[in-house]
Length: 274
Image (cartoon, rainbow, N blue to C red; front, side, top):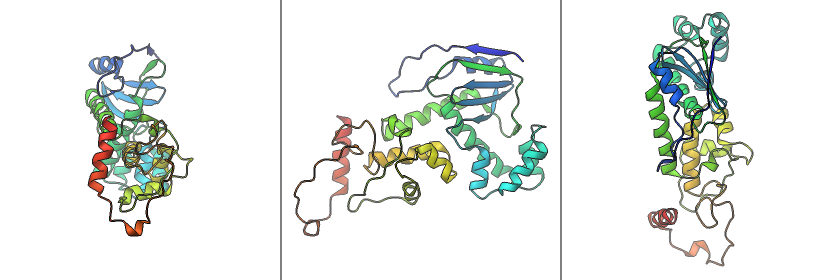
């Protein structure tokens, strides 16, 4: 089986800290190649130049998204994998046997694809390889143009940076902090914080919750920006800093007025801008 190797050139950093988008992937799309695009953070599977699936150890797979969400029983997934995996038609088998609807499969497939591709198309660590002719066991569900996958990867990176421009928090153990008086925490954030034990990383929490890793990264960065989780590498005094300021002898909170949350957020935004 032929293997194409390419040590891709470094990309000049852009204002939005965009990840390195692969010239090799663009070329393969133009050539309408079929096979597996491999990087250290995972694999993209192409059929005639379009991305049909993506996998990454940093992102829960389609099996996790389907079974954790309750759309499919774990045994049903295993049965479809056993009967149709060798034919590369697991997706078709799931729909044909009535285990999931076409809509459910497409939604989970696209969620898993874009989630894994975000990590695969991040900063390259080592050479990129392409193995011609390799097919994924899921089969075709809803192919996506390679250019659309790259655009979505760039959009997601820019979104994360707009929330909290410190990527260190994406891979560090999540350590919760006590909310300030009157500070709101959403239901999704509360579920995440219940698993934040100072050992689990955002990726580990995503697997435990059965959620896409990117969605979990968004929540963790929002929590870091709000000072609700410890953020490694944050200068002392900024929201989310891992070094807590020395407590001052303020009056008893019962004697104080409710804090002006809007004002505190403006102060936080000004500090981040500095």
